[in-house]
Image (tube, rainbow, N blue to C red):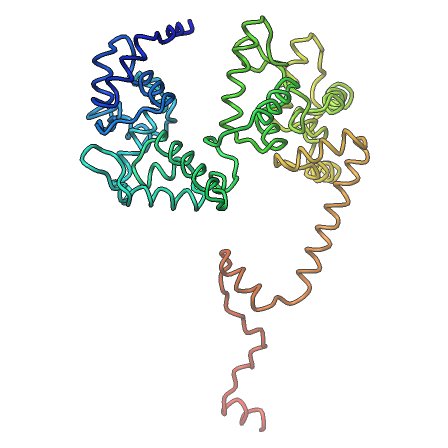
Length: 407
């Protein structure tokens, strides 16, 4: 359930705040206003422009001791996300991020930002933070290098921007140099563009390619969109109420219906095996066996497979089967070409490619290899062999044999 909204400030509370905050600071105002949180008191004091010479201590990270070490281990050794660690330890993602990055700052060899006895940034630490802002570093990079919280980085970025604008100086570069990453702040137009593509049925990779938004940000937008649609009884295209995909949108990875129809024809009419028919239709081995099992479940009777023998015709047929690609990228390219131009044209294209490849191999074998090519073959694993002496050996002759022949 959503949290209840806090009641509006009364005139008496504002009078107490105006009287106590300038003299006793946040701690005194919190004691005088027990029904108001520190955050509410800070916000109202900032709105009213109240200042206090009393400086309180900076807040400490939520995770300490063994829980902090567990969070660091899950992050560094197990590779968990901050959101997953927070859900496991019972704290929010921001608290986990701040605690882990602040603790990792000296462990990674960085020097934390200089602070006073209350934990507030000194001018030296503030200048280092502003230097990193001018370089366009990401917020998490600044946190790790200086050991500060995300709120500190965001607040100092806001103040520095306002100061530069007031003095007429050049504005700060965007965080990460404009690169799309999970922590970058997205505009309302970018979020709407992502939601529009998700509502069309596109996946995260397609949306990233079209909008430039990071995959992590798209996942968060998608989760919020799923919850909003679920309240209205709606779902994303091809997904259930929880966002699990049930049907796939048309893509290059999907087997076209024409390929499935050709595969079934080869199984029924040509009596090919599932492997050979899958190679001919461009399905791949796993998809071919799945489709054959689906045909049997539908009640389609398949005749016995026509096996290839060991004669020359069988060898030629086996050589023809090797014509079809086996790698993922090659099969996808073949599927798209076959769906657009038909299977005869696709087969002819593969035969032409194989003929060109063999011709290039024969030409490369006929010409002598250069020294660089020989070195490359040796680096690839080729071994040096001694050149045999093919000259005909002379017969053994002795002086006695020669003398005897002369008699």
